Length: 211
Ligand SMILES: Nc1nc(C(F)(F)F)ncc1COP(=O)(O)OP(=O)(O)O
Ligand SMILES: [Mg+2]
Image (cartoon, rainbow, N blue to C red):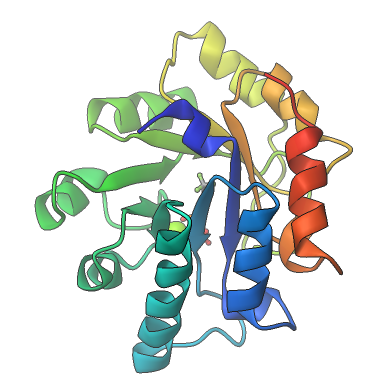
């Protein structure tokens, strides 16, 4: 997977916006989003056939603009939808198990916040790691304390060369710190999903970071 794919990595589920998620996603992509993760989770999240149906519809928006469509947590759904990839966290299925279930062409992302977790992800063949929460977040209901951009700096100092995307509380005012720390991109939910104008929000975020 090209590192540039991680530049502006938008994550959203139906419960992250009061608007039509299909419209929000299309606007975000018009504004410069480079990768999308379907994360249908937390209070009010869809389940079962409704979750699958929205996933299919969001995936077709991504396919229209050749933006990778990644599914969070739900490996079975990623396989069923023929998604471009799957993202799993430390409390989800281990990557080596996931790898046995999915086509080798699928992108695999893993959450990591320590050197051990990052090294393990590298060893198990992850295409990228998500490191965070960078800053305080209200979106992820079970988020741990912020680790800050310095965590990415430390990982780079310890020769972690995997593509890294920072996540957690990222917005225009703090995005460059994440890139300066050595991340290949920024990922976020509410800075775009809750913006009045998601296209403009995505554009401003993309313009707020230089590599
Ligand atoms: N969903 C994520 N996406 C990324 C990405 F790198 F893609 F930006 N990084 C980290 C997470 C967090 O993943 P996880 O720790 O399993 O929590 P949850 O399943 O609640 O999101
Ligand atoms: Mg997860």
